[in-house]
Length: 337
Image (tube, rainbow, N blue to C red):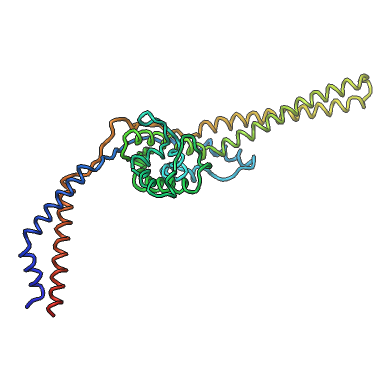
């Protein structure tokens, strides 16, 4: 007898049960779709202007090199990097440690995330993590080992599943940020703050060298201004000390002081020109981040399709029942042999 015959016979004999099991699977899938909480998706679109004018930047690099700074900024921190900043652990955890009011209760976004994902209930079941909290106002440096570990778990889950930054148009430097969560207000707040903190950090790192150049020039201008003042007072003191200008030797000291005043004055003029140029370049080269479409209410509700879940679970339950019958048929065949 063919070895496949017992299996085929089992299918024929139990076809009603197989159909019933598949039907039960469909019901289970529909119920899961019915009771699954919807997820809310935000959409925020923004434009990024790198603010790097090549004609001015060449002068800035030359000036920066004279003041002891080197390297190029534009190639390292171009527009694509803001996408990585938005998914970085530093920025996401910083946003999670900020607070807001949810249901008339002030709490950190980390605590709210734990609540809406029932992570707080899971932690309560274990004695070691029972008292883990993220109180309002807590800083990253104040976290203990367990708090830091749980915050990292939240970051990894959000970066992998919930946060989706992308570049929609490379020619126009248009970017889109999408965030998903089970709470609409949390999604809105997190999206806005993630955009704000990422933008601030991007502006900081892209304009850091120009800012340092301005600060160094300001310090040198103050130093030269003090030197000019000191030279003028020194010249006046020398003139007062040499009351008889008829002697040639009496003219030497005031003339030397006059040369110092002239030299310091000329250096002061040049430094002031460089300072104004550096300030102009600093302002001109600061990137501009402009929100085009904010993450406004109402947000898109994402709920799994009940029909698709019903078909999926019906197929899974049917396949499982056929597999069980196949194993059962193999065992009977082994027993007979």
